[in-house]
Image (tube, rainbow, N blue to C red; front, side, top):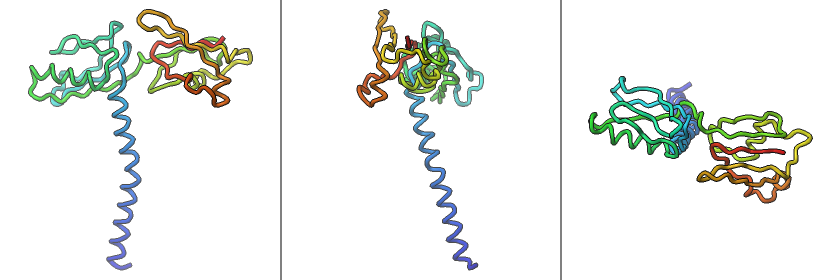
Length: 195
């Protein structure tokens, strides 16, 4: 095999390898963006590091009041804010003590992002939501319906400003591809009831 042909084959293999790795790199950047946008909840476990400051590296729990405490910074409100917003606040507040701090905030466990499914399903209980979850997905995770389920009388209980709302859901409409807008995304603390 000539030197030129080997050279062409080598570059062809390198090119194929690069194209094979490209989707993974794009997926990683997409997942980083999703995590930056994730709205924090009480019960979430965060990992926080500051570059070149190993004494500040720690895991911290978002408390029931929605806050956590971090050295040099004090209390930080986290509930309802994105990971990016919390990282920005930590960076700004640490800047008083550390020149140009590089702060990383990760969600180690999204334990505060829970919904509940009760009633005539295969497995009642809580579901820890890793990303967005709609009603039909929650029902699937809960093992589907029992033979006695009243699939057109499902409701989602949601607390808004201290008031409890009941949102109706008719599964047979979704099965037929109708009224798809009722298959809403669930929010932390929602309870799906299947009578």
